[in-house]
Length: 434
Image (tube, rainbow, N blue to C red; front, side, top):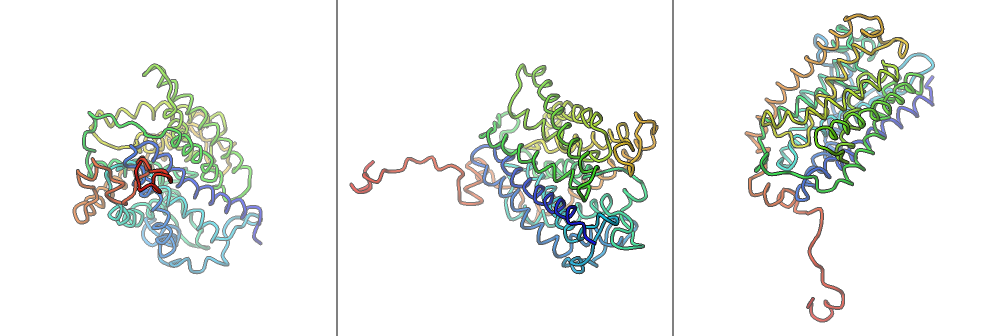
């Protein structure tokens, strides 16, 4: 029997995660210059369309179908989402339609690749970007999702899932590896291939609309409740734990980020507050269902401080990751994965493990480290190859003239703000004289 309450929670969570992509578009759009805002929003928003088609045709099947090769990838049994209409998943009393789970996981795939737009903001062409999205989701995201989200017996009795969760027994409740570490590593690869923006870092690039940034961060925080608590797949105690941990971690991360800004720069900023919130949400994502609230507070604080300090890395290494995907998502996800090895508690979730601070020793910590480095290495190498091929064949980067004059006009024949002085109705009646 399908549990209608759990099903409603899962579908609502899927809608919340979907809202994160428009929220990310606002967040990114406010951080770039006014001449590039539409382009970065289109790079982000376009992922909803492209990944939706991929998920229908073969994406869900490769991520969650019966393992096809040594725990690395699924099969094509569910191609076209065939056979999901009547199937259910979950323990007795908490069963939900498998199609609802497929919809939920679709939104994870969308937001993960959309995050990468921040690494190439202000200089990526739209159509080559969509080709990159198809290849990246297929060759990078789907295997990693299978590694960490596909449990044994999930696709039916006797079926096999991914190696990180079933053989290594790493803990990753909502995507610290497949989403956060993955996107951070891929952002580095993209930034290497596409190169720096003209004038960077000598020319200061200031956000053109900080209210957009704050509003986008608020939508991301709101949607993240679905991202984390929805991963419990039902309205349960673990979902409540994840919900509370999500808020606590984001709150302490904002405090940590702003304290770093105050000490380093002499004043706190709105951009810092928004970025700190996202850093905390990223940091708690893998452990939200495995740690107690006090552990979540510690993880959020560490993420806020570490991610704020990590912003300087791109200047030190000359890597133009435009909107700091590596610093916030890569470093934040990396820290969150490792901190599970310290703060995990079976008191929060009996299906988890105890970390070092809860009597579990170093056993879970090394498992978390192996999973993190595996995801990082795979994503970095494969993304380098994909980005290089697309850049060399289709021209992923815009021309110098388009970048300097405004990539919005060059790529979309639009501008975000019409600043021209319009003649009044009376002047038009008098022959168009202003």
